[in-house]
Amino acid sequence: MISTTLSSIAGQWKAWLAAGLAATLVLALLMEGLARAVLGGPMKPAVLICQVFGWDQSLLWLGEILHYALGLVGFPVGYVVLRSMVAAGPGWLVGAGWGLILFVGAGAVMAPAAGLTPFFGGGTMMVASLIAHLAYGFVLGAVFARFRADTA
Image (cartoon, rainbow, N blue to C red; front, side, top):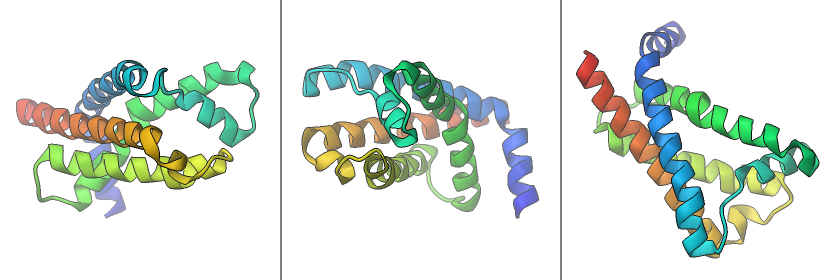
């Protein structure tokens, strides 16, 4: 199973990288545009990352790099692993499920690790995070499936 999964990751790198790029672009637009409209300012996951690691604000650039590296590589690879375990269902649906898993991780693990209330205390910040993570996963799964269909 592990060798099959690793082979799947390596063999599908163009698909997950393209999907990760598309999904990360959508996520970035939502974190800026939607968040400004709903929250009055952009969402800053780099701040959360810095708080988790105990870094001061001078390392926000590193938090940004980590966040985008996860969006471009880490989470797409995780999606490929999930997809190898859940063979049924359209890519966008499995992707949205992956987005929900990422949201739960951000809200239940990362937020408390940063000293915040779980799920950002509820309310509009939680809803904005949920929408952003679901959109990320939806696009990731849809683009991955489309890219694989075009190159298969």
